[in-house]
Length: 281
Image 1 (cartoon, helix red, strand yellow):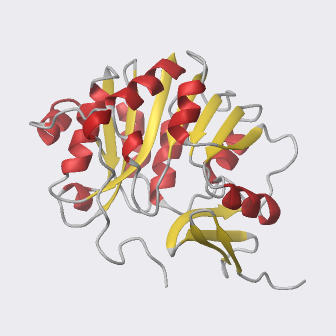
Image 2 (cartoon, rainbow, N blue to C red):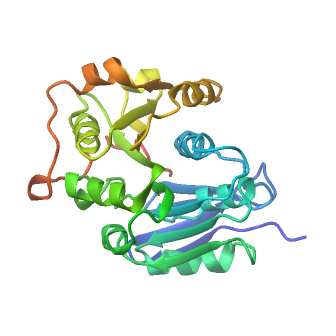
């Protein structure tokens, strides 16, 4: 059997590379412009290499009882890591994936295709535009993992966007987003305030060193109309290889103190990561 070889291709937003993992037979790392975007193990879609992906998965796992099929809307597709995970852990789920980069969609479909009958539907569109077109109360979970380069686009950071997500979710639904920031956390604090303006309950999942301002990194924001299972989320996050904690209630209020919700008129993308933070090679 031939050894897998890296694939490089120009896509809509730059240069994408698929690099095989030498330690796992059918596992691949996807980068775009040198920044890691996705990691996929075709033989074991429940293997989540990136910690932020595990935390997004925790939000899905804790959303309802195990194995129950869900309607999931993914904003940002990459190599379809989370859609594959949900298809494996919750058979019968209906999943819509929105990815703006048509070239990236084609690359993933060619080299890392999903199995027939997976319930995963991928389409090319802007995440905000697609979300605005979704029917009311049509999703159990919305997962947002959208980065233009290494920054969350400005139009996905506003109260108007958050209210649109709140409208699309069912009453017991969950919104989970991958965000990135560093001290003094101006962006992350504003995002908590923004989503608190649209949802009754919000929490953050992140590693303690990141929340202490020791490094720039990822944090997963989870929001819901109904009370969040913070104990279950905390237990799952604490059991990861790089343990995280769940900030909620008074602790999250202290973290967010003084931050104001952001509206479309003054929305800005997440900050540029320090040089080399998310790059490979």
